[in-house]
Amino acid sequence: MILGTAGHIDHGKTALVRALTGVDTDRLPEEKRRGITIALGFAPLTLEGVGTLGVVDVPGHEAFVRTMLAGATGVDLALLVVAADEGVKPQTREHLAILTLLGVQGGVVALTKRDLVDPELLAIAIDDARTAVRGSPLADAPIIPVSAHTGEGIDVLRTALAERARAVPRRDAEDLWRMPVDRVFSVAGAGTVVTGTAWSGALERDAALRVAPGDRTARVRGIETHGARADRALPGTRAAVALAGIDRAEIPHDAVLVREGDPWTPSRVLRADVALLDAAPVIGPRRQLRFHLGTAEAGCRAVAAGGPIAAGATRAVRLILDRPVVARAGDRFVLRGGSPVGTLGGGVVTDPGPPSVRAKPFASVGADASARLGWILDEAAAGGVEVGTLPVRIGVRPAQVERLLKDAPKVVRVGERLYGAHVLDRQRARLLDELQRAHAADPLAPGLDRQTARNALSQNPALADEVIRRAERAGLLVVEGAWLRAPGFSAGTGTAAREARDRLLDLLRSAGAEPPSVAELVAQLGDDVPALLKLLERERLVIPVALDRWFAREGVVLLLGRLRDHVRPGTAYPPSALRDALGVSRKYLIPFLEWCDRQRISHRAADGRTFGTVPGEP
Image (cartoon, rainbow, N blue to C red; front, side, top):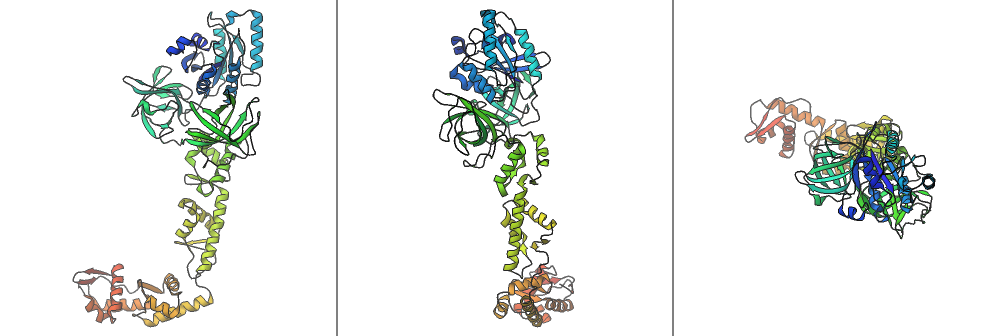
């Protein structure tokens, strides 16, 4: 669990952390010289009945609000620090607004420097703090006067923090692992080391990691949590991770470490629900803003359907960033801007991976996972969405994916992709249209070739096959081998087609063992001959002995009979010896013998052909 400090500069945050933990989080020489916190500081805080919390001490100076944001994002509990001798100040209010925007669930207010004020001033300071936190996550937080100098109230503060910490839900160690990086350095013997707050999931030694954005990979060499070696880094803990296979210079300070193979995809476009503070100016699509998520910062513009965003309003928007960030649905962020720069508002990511920079904002704010999944599937249409991307794209734990799909009746799973049920309905209608066109265009064909149908429906063969299966189960088409046909359809059943078929069959039967070529048949009977031959082949009435030479079945039976009467096993016969026996010219003999080779009736060798048992029927 992470406890984050917040409050105005010089209100005693670092001194209070030192009194609670014994750790001085001001570690930089410049911090020591200037007496203010510039970088994030970290310390472990052990609370009875709770365990060890990671404390993030953030700077209070306005110039370092960006650093404060990096520390505050991802905290579970806030420790708002207000000096009793000064009361609530501008950075107190901005930090409180940031905590509210980031969805911090609660915390404690510490009224520091108790030893510097009398009871009357202390009462005024308490009232001032209570007014300031009204309407925030700290509205019901206990306000505890303390003195880091004398130790007064420190034990009471510890007790209050423990009570609040016990009410915070634990993070799920079975979730996807993610850790924004806030420090990168090298240690002799350990190599490259990164530190950060583990937002979700758990990490073990030797795990393969990816540094995002980017495609750099590394292996976990070692882990420390709260300054001690550990086998695992659990969510909600401060962790230092020693990495093998990567140089310090290859890791930006605002990078995110994720597990290799998990579906994290950096993006420059996000969908989000954005809320502006009451004092914020109207935000139009051209206003330049600063987007803060974890340790990442990017310039951005916010485009809302229906026009600019007014102060105090919450709107569904599309955020266009000037650099990619690693985000997940449900992540909270802060927007800053203006002159001087201040916090304007913030929001919640609702879709971290829209398909394009022109993707429309969602239809409404506050939509649940099922509704957002439906909108994403509508947009994806026949392209579908990979199941494996849902933990990031929808913002659910991997263990929740199956329940989400079970509760979404209008979602169809095909393999590892999801589609809206309406997509399959449209694809089915398209399939039936293609089938009717095929029947009308070629009534002699057995129907629509299955591969042609698949190509017409989708680039994903699995989706096309599912559409075909569903149409077959519904009785809307019949599948026969590689062909699809409408129920009741039979090729060549029209009067004209039946007459043409009979004429062609009679001609081939009368030709016996010396049928005309396909070209000769076309010249005599017309362009429908190839289709009629296919029709007769399906009826097993003709046999394609060669590409351009089709025999009536009776003609092949005749030649097989003559062959069986003439040949003897183990004897090789040259074509000349077979020509007289079969009674046909070489023009018909060679195609027939090659057909026998393909049917394994004969075996061709240098000295002729040998035959095994010659069948009576082809």
